[in-house]
Image 1 (cartoon, rainbow, N blue to C red):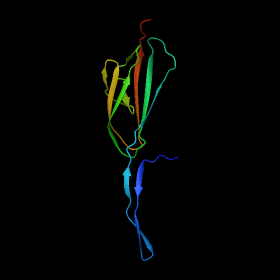
Image 2: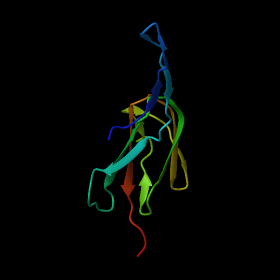
Image 3: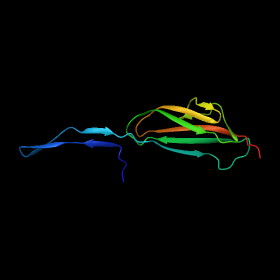
Image 4: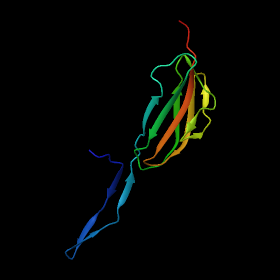
Length: 126
């Protein structure tokens, strides 16, 4: 089944045996984007760096603005300062405790935003 991301509607009349169509009335549907996350290592030791990649995909045709992103850094890891990028361009997130936040200013319809950042494995108490 195909994804429906807009509604097109046309009205018509019949005049002297001919069909006359109206213009198309179009409505873009606001659909929630999808999000996936991956990490570059399945196993790691204390002192190693992990790179997380988050892919946000717009399935809507409409522009999405001011999309908040949140990621909680896991216990046993610390955020690597200045490692945050959006579509390979350096960006500055906010780090409060172990919660990383950033607002994507805009995401075009049917576009993809790729966020990457790193954490260092610091371990924890046993």
